[in-house]
Length: 142
Image: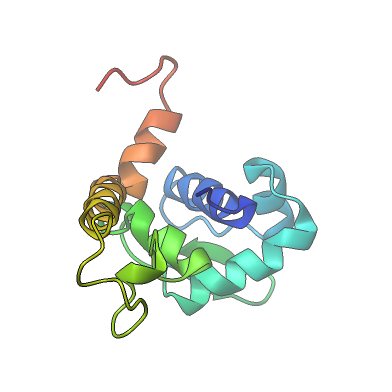
């Protein structure tokens, strides 16, 4: 399993926005350059982030993009799922009758444990924490 490039770009954009001074509203061009996101990807990613209510957009001369809430309140799972949709490592983890083997498959509990571990790590990782790491001159040791 691998996240799409769009999810990676979305994280870059969110971290960049979190690192800006309060009240900043960079436009698309600034975001594309600062986040190293190709402009042809940017609009779709920004739309997905706005639809998930993770960013706000404002049109006009003083328009641009900003986080919709404090970066401490946004985690990586929020960002990844805004782009990728709900996280499911295997079809058997979907609700309902997604797999006829779900009740007796010996691997089902492993898939569930792996998904729980991954989502737990992503939930603990806030955009604020990543932005703080990005602002340091040395790698974070925690």
